[in-house]
Image 1: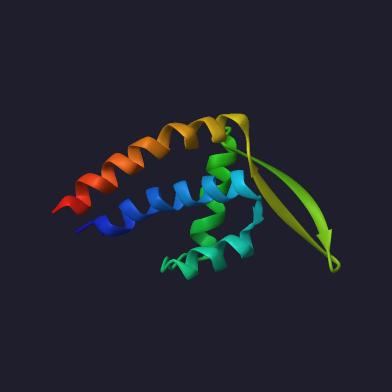
Image 2: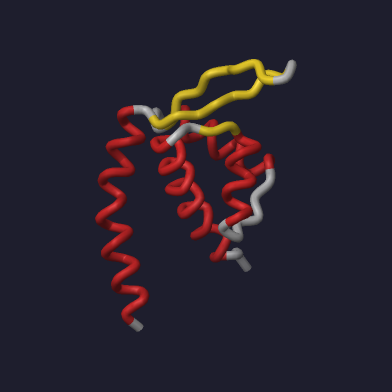
Amino acid sequence: MVDISREFLLGFIKIHVLYHADKEGFCGVDMMKELKKHGYRIGPGTLYPTLHRMQEGGYLASEKRKENGRIRIYYRATPKGRLALSRIRPKIGELVSEVLEH
């Protein structure tokens, strides 16, 4: 049997990623911490492939930065990512309103 909740949560995670990529940008480690604060249990084996797919799709851009002798990759939303987020927001409001109605 397929774990449907995991499948749905991956969609929520992508929206969360887009939000933070638009707001301030982030590195993968920081995003895992952020998602953990919201109850998502996601490891690097799930997060980094998701980030790479979003980047390949044109939603995220990345840049390498050297911090404390380590190279970190920071992600930011592209214009396509910001447009997607702006189109998702009203749908989220509509969905939340409907789902919480019951």
